[in-house]
Length: 271
Image (cartoon, rainbow, N blue to C red; front, side, top):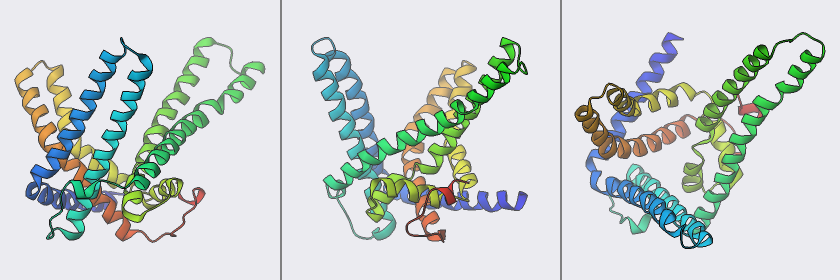
């Protein structure tokens, strides 16, 4: 186990070093796309707030359009990073990385599948045990309300953990749509298959990248506003662009090491 963690740590170091080199060299382009995503998200919230007083249907329509714009910019950034990984010597404009209509449609459909998977796993973990609890109550094995709440709380906690694991395993689906032209549900299955055996590496990578955010929360809790502000600025302008590149590099490494089928099934890749 210790040797496995060492290998995982080295893999994470390699990913971050490669990502840092790309981010440093093309920082302005990547940071610009991140900033456009931030502006789109902020504008969406403001527009929805002001239009909600005028017309609710118009407000919902504008939110949908801004969400679509946000996803388009996000996919453009991933395509731009793919270009840097594959053909860094040849220049490409940001406009040239805008995803096709087919890619956007597939991404939106895959996002719905993604949400259904998350909700389905949570319901499966939290609702299936309740008939067992009911049977134990009927047979007087469980007699107190406190015990019922305790058992329910345990299964809800397990459900939240299952959501996190599922999210981590299938969150690479956009990369397959952009890189391999995968169908929506196929991209979910491919993400599940390629992350099999790489869960620890991905988790370590996220912990490293999310370290600044944890520091920000810690210093905010300690009421050190200047330090927390500096950390927040560093996180926003450095860690966010670096994270996008790091996850793309991690995807490429997982694909290079992937030995499974081109059309994987779900059952053999769950564990």
